[in-house]
Every structure is written in C-alpha cells, then in structure tokens.
Image (cartoon, rainbow, N blue to C red):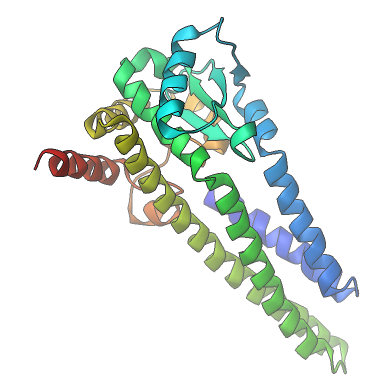
Length: 283
C-alpha cells in the first residue's frame, strides 16, 4: 500500500509541476489542489460506505446495537450517529462523517459475533471518540496544510529556476529539481500525517476506556480482533485493505518500518496502555 501511495503522490507532484511549468500559475494550482482535498473530505462518508459495502440499519432492524450506541452517546453528550452494518468475515469497525450531525458508525457482522456486549461497547466507544474529536476533519486539515507547504517550497524553487531561463537544458534540470523537492516534501508530510493518525488512535482508545470505565474490555476486544484476523483468508483481508485507515485495527504487517508507515500503533502497545489505565484506576 505504501508503494501505491508513493506512486500516486509522485504522479500528483508531476501533474502539478507540469501545470506550473506551462504557466497555469501557483495560486490557481493551489486552489485547485485544496478544492480536490476538500471534496474528498466532503464526500468521504459516502465513499467509505460504498467501498465497505456497509448498509445503514434502523432501530427496528437491529435494536440491540442502536440501544448500545444510544447509551454511549448520552454519556458522551454526543448526537446519535447513523448505524451501519457490513456483511464481512473480517471483524472490524469504523467511523466516518464530516461532522457530528452527519456521522456514521459501522460494524461488521463478524465483529458482533466475535465480541461480547462489553467488548463491543469498547469498540464503539473508540469510534465515537473519533467522531467527537472530529478526527476526519483534523487529518484533512493536516493534509491541506502540508500540501500548501509543499507547493510553496516547489513554487519558490520554480520561480528561482524559471525567473532567468536561458536554455532548454536549464529548464529540464529545473523541472527535475521541482519534482525531487516536491517528492521529498510530500514524503515528509506523509510521515507526519501518519504520526498524527497513530496519536489519534491512542487518544480514541483512552477516551473509550474513560467513557465505558472498562479499559480491559477494549483491550480484550483488540486482542480478539487481532487474533481472529490471523485465521482469515488473505483474499478476504485484501478485499477491505483500502479501508485500513478507517478501521479500529488495520490488516498490516508488523515490524519497525510498517509501524512508522501505519495509520495505527501496534496492537500490543495499545493493549499495554489500556492495561496501564486499569492499574491506575485501582492502584
């Protein structure tokens, strides 16, 4: 997945650089880029629902799940989100939405079968924390600011190189440098946004534990989900791979490099922190 992101980022940099090279202008280019990112944010809930195959369910269709969410929302002082269910063998959950009033919490059928009520409560508490903290908006804004910074660096380089154009060779060298600078800036921004995302996952775990008062139940849920994924056929995991950033636990390999590139912290560390919360609670 990182290679895919790198390729997409490279193509995006090339595209914008070419626009600048042919005189489209820095500010129109930046405006177009920001509009593209805001559009992704605005339609994110519909895109994620469509990609996951999740269907919104009424209280009549699943009263137990609705009551569980309603009770947590009352404690959290949060408007009740729409509730969706994914018919998937992968036990997982996610939250999406532009704001509190348009938010959605989705859980898979296999997750509801795997967890007991208190564990499921912990998982949903985690997702409600993402909604209350407006994490989708936070990450979108972080992406916009990093993108603007990238264009400022690139445009400064562009102006320096093309302000005194003499030969075609100089032009070719200049646009090559623009692409290199843009790529380096994009990679750094990518890593920073990933770090923000991992931090927000820790915060969501902590907030869920405080909301339910049962940190160990969320820890048990994380352990069950992670353990269950090891027995799921790879083709089923790959089918939902594009939504890893939204899930409570992504399907991702362990290791130092993947920990740096992942949107989520290692499950073991998350469980460890939840156990520490339990000890502090009774210590």
